[in-house]
Length: 409
Ligand code: SF4
Image (tube, rainbow, N blue to C red; front, side, top):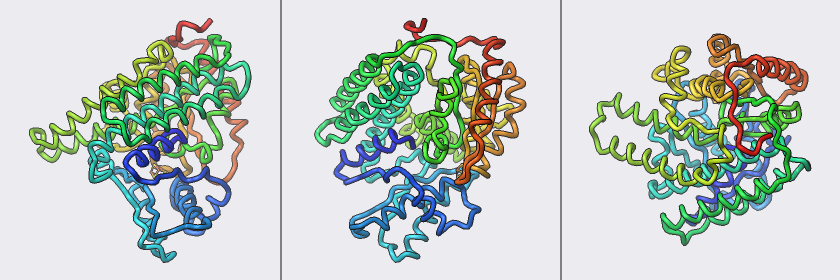
């Protein structure tokens, strides 16, 4: 998750009386502890998440009887489904087998997140949308601010404001949503008040890829800021996209299992309708701000179908189809280049990379490049220099122009 998404999720847990905290920002100790239980063949996010949990285990005052770890699972061809079972194994090895690892799964779109799943899933969804909105505003404003640090300060303030509402235990459904709409409107106004010079022409770089590595600044060595420092503006694929994808795959599984006419299907469809309604309510105050930055409202038609000729979503599962389909979508929105951020040896990144050449050729020649990350350093600055040159060259000749909010000169 992004720091915003993790903070929103923890606030939702607090809203139902669970004393939840986000693991502290990853650091060198994360890699050291994660490395003690990794052979080197595991995925990089596994090492980072395991290391972060082990930092909690090794922290002063750690109380195994009062602690649980939250590590969701995902279906699909990759190794993410192994993270939680492996964490349980390591905890047992360290003598902490009584520490529960809570693992809702994407198979049922995380419906089993708690005993009171309906309300919790609703709150989580609303909170994640709020977190995504704040990140999107940050990335829209920060490249244009006239005084460095202003947008980051608003980002921090916006998360605190959102947390204060999300974590409240006394807000019933409708009132909760109305309060969230009020606070995101306040967040919008804070971002609008950041002194900035909105001038057209910065290359717009879509960032897709493996969900953890692209959103976790420690793992991707602050790739978004580096792209901004190279003159770009970033459109980062958000967390909501993954939730819409798990909803889509839940419906697909139900059809495969012959449950097209079933109560389960009805429940899944109703959930989809409500999620769209909540998202629309929360996004409504941003209609002018997100003009030209609209996320796909129909994942199947706008993301999965464009990916189908390269990676059919009924066979290729997980982030790879989202990365490829979103790259096509972003080209249609006028992006000047696409960067795929993935962990070194990630099969999603490797499969996507294999089809990006064909995708780029079919989509007006837009430059697409993979950046792989592990704990070692590579010359990212040099690679970004080259990539931004390609993006600028494409910007000069591209057929699809982007749309800007009205206040751009
Ligand atoms: S998406 Fe990539 S990095 Fe993440 S678990 Fe799967 S293979 Fe590993």
